[in-house]
Picture (cartoon, rainbow, N blue to C red):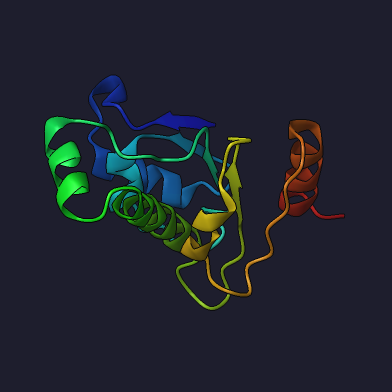
Length: 140
Protein backbone atom coordinates (compact mmCIF):
# COMPACT_ATOMS: atom_id res chain seq x y z
CA UNK A 1 0.00 0.00 0.00
CA UNK A 2 1.41 3.41 -0.91
CA UNK A 3 0.17 6.61 0.71
CA UNK A 4 1.04 9.95 -0.85
CA UNK A 5 1.25 12.95 1.45
CA UNK A 6 -0.19 15.34 -1.07
CA UNK A 7 -3.93 15.60 -0.40
CA UNK A 8 -4.84 12.43 -2.27
CA UNK A 9 -8.59 11.98 -2.53
CA UNK A 10 -9.10 15.05 -0.35
CA UNK A 11 -7.37 13.53 2.70
CA UNK A 12 -5.39 15.87 4.89
CA UNK A 13 -1.91 15.03 6.19
CA UNK A 14 -3.15 14.05 9.67
CA UNK A 15 -5.55 11.49 8.18
CA UNK A 16 -2.82 10.06 5.95
CA UNK A 17 -0.51 9.71 8.95
CA UNK A 18 -3.26 7.94 10.94
CA UNK A 19 -3.76 5.47 8.08
CA UNK A 20 0.00 4.96 7.85
CA UNK A 21 0.28 4.26 11.60
CA UNK A 22 -2.43 1.60 11.38
CA UNK A 23 -0.93 -0.27 8.41
CA UNK A 24 2.48 -1.87 9.06
CA UNK A 25 3.19 -2.58 5.40
CA UNK A 26 2.29 0.85 4.00
CA UNK A 27 4.61 3.26 2.25
CA UNK A 28 4.28 7.00 2.87
CA UNK A 29 5.87 9.27 0.27
CA UNK A 30 6.35 12.87 1.26
CA UNK A 31 8.44 16.01 1.39
CA UNK A 32 10.18 18.03 4.10
CA UNK A 33 6.78 18.84 5.61
CA UNK A 34 6.12 15.15 6.25
CA UNK A 35 9.62 14.55 7.59
CA UNK A 36 9.26 17.43 10.02
CA UNK A 37 5.78 16.53 11.25
CA UNK A 38 5.55 12.73 11.35
CA UNK A 39 5.50 10.84 14.66
CA UNK A 40 5.08 7.11 14.02
CA UNK A 41 6.80 5.01 16.68
CA UNK A 42 6.85 1.24 16.38
CA UNK A 43 6.72 -1.17 13.45
CA UNK A 44 4.76 1.06 11.08
CA UNK A 45 7.88 3.14 10.39
CA UNK A 46 10.85 0.88 9.67
CA UNK A 47 12.40 2.49 6.61
CA UNK A 48 13.20 6.05 5.64
CA UNK A 49 14.71 6.64 2.20
CA UNK A 50 16.19 9.91 0.95
CA UNK A 51 16.91 10.26 -2.75
CA UNK A 52 19.65 12.82 -2.12
CA UNK A 53 21.51 14.70 0.58
CA UNK A 54 19.03 17.34 1.86
CA UNK A 55 21.17 20.41 1.13
CA UNK A 56 19.46 23.76 1.81
CA UNK A 57 17.77 25.51 -1.09
CA UNK A 58 19.96 28.40 -2.23
CA UNK A 59 17.39 31.16 -1.88
CA UNK A 60 18.27 34.75 -0.97
CA UNK A 61 17.68 34.25 2.79
CA UNK A 62 19.87 31.14 2.90
CA UNK A 63 22.66 32.88 0.98
CA UNK A 64 22.61 35.86 3.36
CA UNK A 65 22.67 33.61 6.42
CA UNK A 66 25.44 31.46 4.93
CA UNK A 67 27.57 34.56 4.45
CA UNK A 68 26.86 35.82 7.97
CA UNK A 69 27.17 32.48 9.80
CA UNK A 70 30.25 30.73 8.50
CA UNK A 71 29.89 29.70 4.88
CA UNK A 72 30.26 25.97 4.24
CA UNK A 73 30.15 25.19 7.99
CA UNK A 74 26.67 26.76 8.15
CA UNK A 75 25.52 24.70 5.15
CA UNK A 76 26.83 21.50 6.74
CA UNK A 77 25.16 22.34 10.05
CA UNK A 78 21.75 22.80 8.38
CA UNK A 79 22.15 19.58 6.41
CA UNK A 80 23.20 17.59 9.49
CA UNK A 81 20.15 18.94 11.35
CA UNK A 82 17.81 17.76 8.56
CA UNK A 83 19.41 14.31 8.54
CA UNK A 84 19.30 14.12 12.35
CA UNK A 85 15.63 15.06 12.42
CA UNK A 86 14.73 12.52 9.73
CA UNK A 87 16.68 9.77 11.51
CA UNK A 88 14.94 10.75 14.75
CA UNK A 89 11.59 10.01 13.10
CA UNK A 90 12.74 6.42 12.54
CA UNK A 91 13.85 5.67 16.11
CA UNK A 92 11.26 7.12 18.51
CA UNK A 93 11.38 4.59 21.37
CA UNK A 94 13.98 2.23 22.85
CA UNK A 95 12.55 -0.82 21.03
CA UNK A 96 12.24 0.79 17.59
CA UNK A 97 14.36 -0.59 14.76
CA UNK A 98 14.71 0.69 11.24
CA UNK A 99 16.81 1.41 8.20
CA UNK A 100 17.75 4.91 7.09
CA UNK A 101 18.76 4.87 3.43
CA UNK A 102 20.40 7.68 1.52
CA UNK A 103 20.51 6.97 -2.21
CA UNK A 104 23.03 9.71 -2.96
CA UNK A 105 26.55 8.47 -3.75
CA UNK A 106 27.84 11.98 -3.02
CA UNK A 107 27.12 11.85 0.74
CA UNK A 108 30.18 13.43 2.38
CA UNK A 109 31.62 11.63 5.43
CA UNK A 110 31.69 14.90 7.36
CA UNK A 111 27.88 14.76 7.64
CA UNK A 112 27.85 11.39 9.42
CA UNK A 113 27.87 13.28 12.73
CA UNK A 114 24.12 13.68 12.18
CA UNK A 115 23.62 10.10 13.34
CA UNK A 116 24.11 8.63 16.82
CA UNK A 117 27.62 7.27 17.49
CA UNK A 118 26.59 3.61 17.55
CA UNK A 119 24.73 3.80 14.23
CA UNK A 120 26.32 1.44 11.71
CA UNK A 121 26.91 3.11 8.33
CA UNK A 122 27.45 1.06 5.21
CA UNK A 123 28.18 2.40 1.75
CA UNK A 124 27.01 0.02 -0.96
CA UNK A 125 25.39 -0.12 -4.35
CA UNK A 126 21.65 -0.03 -4.94
CA UNK A 127 21.29 -3.79 -5.56
CA UNK A 128 23.07 -4.64 -2.30
CA UNK A 129 21.05 -2.03 -0.41
CA UNK A 130 17.78 -3.51 -1.70
CA UNK A 131 18.85 -7.02 -0.69
CA UNK A 132 19.86 -5.92 2.82
CA UNK A 133 16.73 -3.82 3.35
CA UNK A 134 14.53 -6.69 2.16
CA UNK A 135 16.29 -8.99 4.63
CA UNK A 136 15.76 -6.50 7.44
CA UNK A 137 12.09 -5.92 6.68
CA UNK A 138 11.25 -9.59 6.03
CA UNK A 139 13.51 -11.67 8.29
CA UNK A 140 13.48 -15.46 7.90
